[in-house]
Image (cartoon, rainbow, N blue to C red; front, side, top):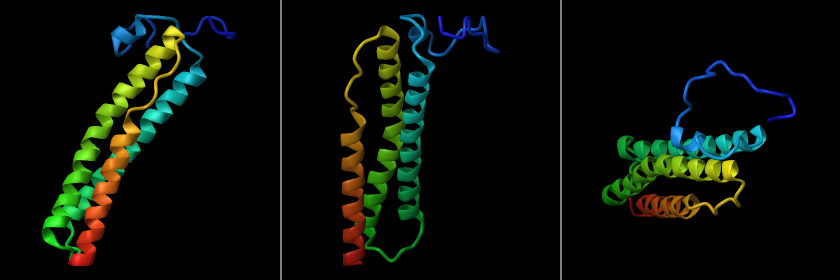
Length: 131
């Protein structure tokens, strides 16, 4: 129960998604839930940026060395496709910890994202130097 009393929303009575998450624990402070959602959306923006970089390298003729350009595009595209799945899992784990009043987990997404950006950027940079 919040300080504002019983909270009602337009979807009252309908199940929330994912049901397995919302059926456990207690409702956390809305500020923490919204912060968790903002973090999820930030990872989605990161995925979109990776996809944009990959598509640009794959489609636009930039005069770069072909094999390295395609390699960089592939790394960025794979990273852009993988990040949303990781973001969903991270959001779910954090929300579950909030609902159970447990300590938050360390993020698993940063290392793979850093690797994708570093390797993709290095390949694109080499492609520019060689091409």
